[in-house]
Image 1 (cartoon, helix red, strand yellow):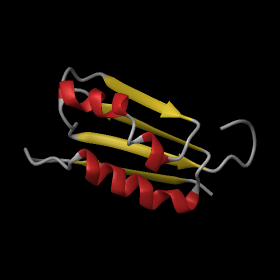
Image 2 (cartoon, rainbow, N blue to C red):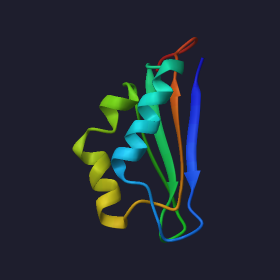
Image 3 (tube, rainbow, N blue to C red):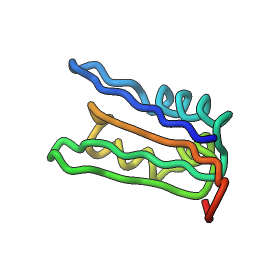
Length: 89
């Protein structure tokens, strides 16, 4: 009912925000009620962004792109697309 996706970059090459959006959009077949991302920042901290909307819409929002514009695309990211079977999105 839900999807989990992510990547770990071992070298300097990173996916684009469009690549991440494509992966997230593909995961929507498993859930469209909520989406989120968690990543490792350059400082070694964990960044989190989530919302009760579809991944394809969420990743098109300007504030998500701004998260990665300042720090760059992370080397480690995990995301989810959730189908609300219980509780709220």
